[in-house]
Image (cartoon, rainbow, N blue to C red; front, side):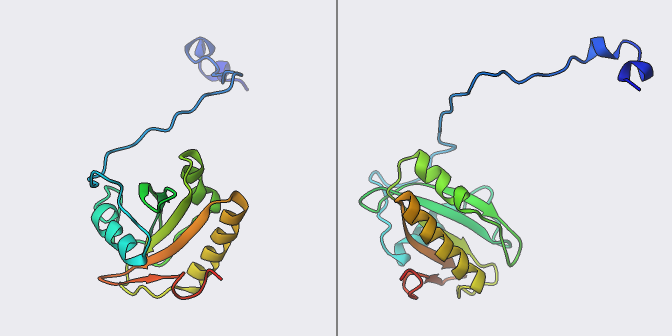
Length: 170
């Protein structure tokens, strides 16, 4: 049966939608300005990354301290933050993330390096086996793309842990 059997005149009310066959041109624009200093913030140590998290990401409109949130800091050649991207919001003890999600904005913005960060709602910043596994996958993917994964910092309540400092980047 066709729609016209149920609703006479339906084909005149709703016309089929067709996508144009031509390609699209995309443009990257900023979502909002962040209150950063006049010069870009240096982010070359885990302490500075954790400070950046507390200043800019913990106040993000979509950040939820009760769920794991993963963000990527986009860095220039001097390890200064060009921008950040809240990539994934998960549950209380896990989140889903794929390398393409981590590196998408870095590629589009011509970043030289990325710094991956996420929070643990429990307040403990020790990495899980899943954190270590994801970090190793991201380091390998970054090597293929010629984008350095500078670190993966896990933020707890008043503390943080660097996976590079723990030796997981060897």
